[in-house]
Amino acid sequence: LDLTLVLLKLVQQFPDKMWYVLAHDDTYISLPSLLCELAANDPSKAYYVGSTHCRGKNVSCRGGGIKFDPQSFSSKVYGGWNNGGAGVVISKGLAMKMLSEGNSCLKHYSNIWKASDGADVLLGCCVLDT
Image 1 (spheres, helix red, strand yellow):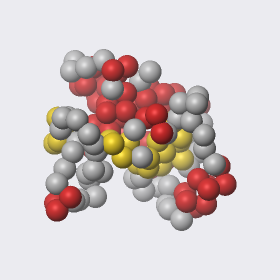
Image 2: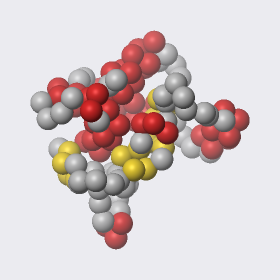
Image 3: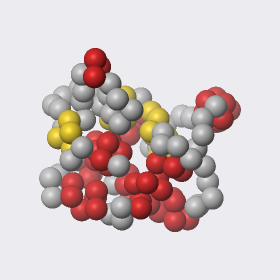
Image 4: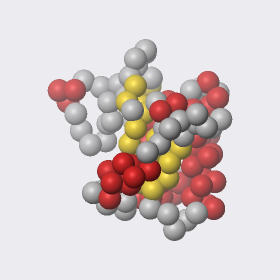
C-alpha cells in the first residue's frame, strides 16, 4: 500500500479537511485525545505526526539521510520516519506542499524500492524532501 497515493486520494476527495490520518485497519485511535492534541496546532503549517521509528540503515532520501544526529536537529528533519503501522497524521499545509510537486517524489523513489516494501519510509522521504 502506497501511503503517498492514499494521501493524494484523501486530499482529492476531502480538500477541505485540516488533518489527514493514515492508519492501518487494526490501529486503535482515541479520537478525543487526537483531536485535543491537534487543536493546539495550526493545520496550515507543515506537521508530520506519528510514532518515530529510526532503526535500521540510514535511508538516503533526496533531502539527505532520514536518520539524523540529534545534536544537529532542524525543523526539516524529523528524526527518522513515522511508523505506518502506528498511524501517521499529516497537516493540510504539509499535504498541499507535498502534492504541489505532483508525483515527483513517488516517481523518484519508485526507481529505488517498491512502495509496498517501505510505504512509511517512502512517505518519510517525501516529507523530508518537501
